[in-house]
Image (cartoon, rainbow, N blue to C red; front, side, top):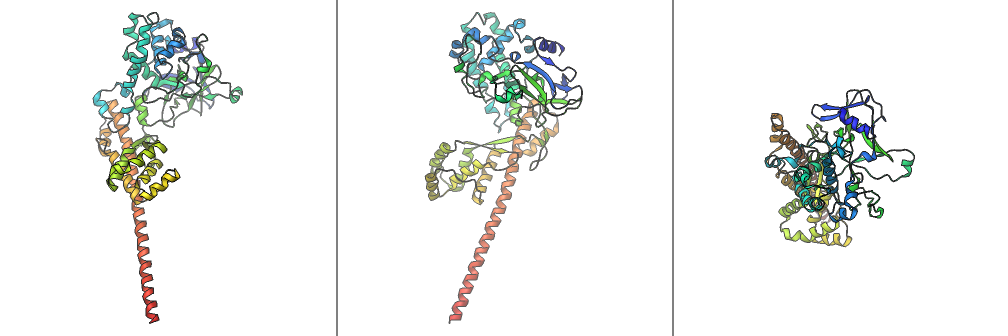
Length: 492
């Protein structure tokens, strides 16, 4: 790492070499280790803004020209940044980032590179639908390849087979997915003028490796149009590769250092005291294991909190499609076609066709509301339409019965049971990719099982309450009938 450190410092970066080192860590690959006890607020390293690699700092956008950049759609999504990274790599020693590009990984454990058999292990989860391989390849063929073929002066034919292939596009895209940060332009806000650093966020990705925005990709004066720059936080020009900062690993609720940005620099600063020998953890925003495996190729296994038990990720969640609710209600109430008007109204008013269950194992409020809508009598439905408000998320026995049916249907979409997955993990012979897939699906199934158990318990209480109320009503009726007989006899 000395070569990389030297490159970093030669280009204006500063590292407290006495405070930290980068090295191999068992179970975490490469990461940062504290060399001495560090207090909160200690600056580990400083990165000049112009040493970050983005569509703002690479020379490629200005060489192509803004009109060409937009003509090929490189100002939308990640295609522009990926092309810049491919181009910088092709420049070799002439690139400012040569010392950085040379240490970036080219092999990944993310599902983008899994075999079909490994991907089958994710059946039932939403991961496969979010890999985005097809969308990435479409961007390559529709945006990147045409601009490469149009400028032989920038993309020599002899370099294409080595640096500008679909395979390299996937590698660079995976580097962006797993290592980029969201680094906004400096706006000179009041709190920043008081030398209060602003936190730089790790990049938020979408399923298709695409951030939906339409900003200008470059700040080079000859091409930059300030009016075209979108200040939205999802501006693709804000997505940047940040040398040194991307060396830190992350783990659920383990963050002890964060990246902050100032006018001219970014700084990695400790957010709590760190003991010598401890790993220095950044934060990825504590995503669920489904996102961790998709973006980074690893999972977090920490003690779970009630109502769950065992090891997993407390940020895990399960997505439930609205059509499962519709089918469950139809199973209870009959004709599916009867509900179509209500479904259309729901989609227009609520815009939710997927509900998310978290590790607290509570039924989603939106799922309850939709179920109530579908269970309403015709008179109640007309009243709901008149008010123009979604039904309140209140539960009763009928609703809980539907919810349990929905959860069981969702659980049946996995090919294995909780017990089978636990046995697989205990075996200890799984490959890394298969093990990660089992951890992801097991975490989701535990949430569903816990939510089913909670709903069943709630249903039993509701039925007991209904039964008690029924008994009370019968008892009052019997008492009133007996009193009526006594009064009649007394009058006689």
